[in-house]
Length: 441
Image (cartoon, rainbow, N blue to C red; front, side, top):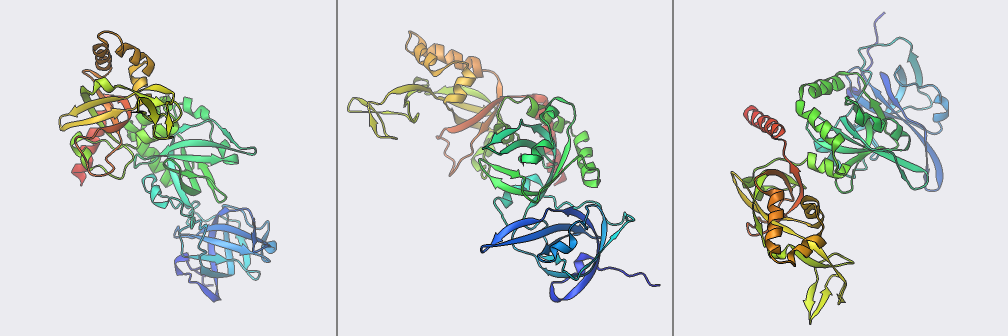
């Protein structure tokens, strides 16, 4: 008897008439989805199958056929589907980036094989590297799969009355860190106790939405599946990379000990390292990072300025009165604000920078009111200079800077986002990695 060879998904073509027989493994079996279409209640049932070539395809069942197949599908098993239809894929909520999908009709015959066949893959991921996810922000036409090492797990946070979430920082081999938001039941997949143990789990999250709120992040949704430490060639490859990369372990430890918010920690981690000579040409990033020394305090007489106590904007003197132009109030109540202007340098050049109030207070270890009081005393200007140089003098820092938004102006002072102490051993490892990557090119 001649063995029948079922067509692979590559050889299925959309047709309103032709019916196909296929053999594939059920990878994901989603719940039946109830929705309303023009006032009429509807149901749809989605599944994801993978064939012997490892290609995935979406499969739908619509009413009234749904009732014929309830309870007949179980994830992980291989099925023979006889007389199913192939159509063009729907435009929204694609669970795989395929231009066609299968439809199980009322007349389709479903046969489950009880013996496994290892030639058909037991998993299917359409992974997007974390550094490419920003290209898909708010794209509702499909969902995405991502894989990464878990660097940090936040506590559960209640949102509204009936919802809660947990944020997770994950990183892949591109060294990109991104926030994954786990909603409701998915929040229990990981526990914040992981932050205190010497392991770095691998998470594979399928069916995610890519969103943008103060930066790109990914979020669970209706078609999400979460797998922690699954064993397959993709996760094994990531695990091997992690074990071979000392810098990956350093980044994990830094995340877990960071005093910054999760957003700030992610921003800092994703910041490209540059030299000051490269700063004028940096574009399309939120921050850039440079190891540099402070060589001069600029405009020390204007370290303190008076700001409106409502909007915190600088006030102006108008007809002898302090006026807030932001909210158009005369004789407004003011508070002192701190503003440090420095010149920093490395071997490639120098740059004027501005450290704003909150960061300046944190670095100097004193409040703006204290600095104002010192300035009003005899020799106060020199005492403030001594305090600034005690903080920055003769030491290199890692300056995280906002890049130019337009044409670079050497007379302009550029805003500092963060100032970090330098671990020179780590900096040298990054430098060696950069040099090695240039040689490979």
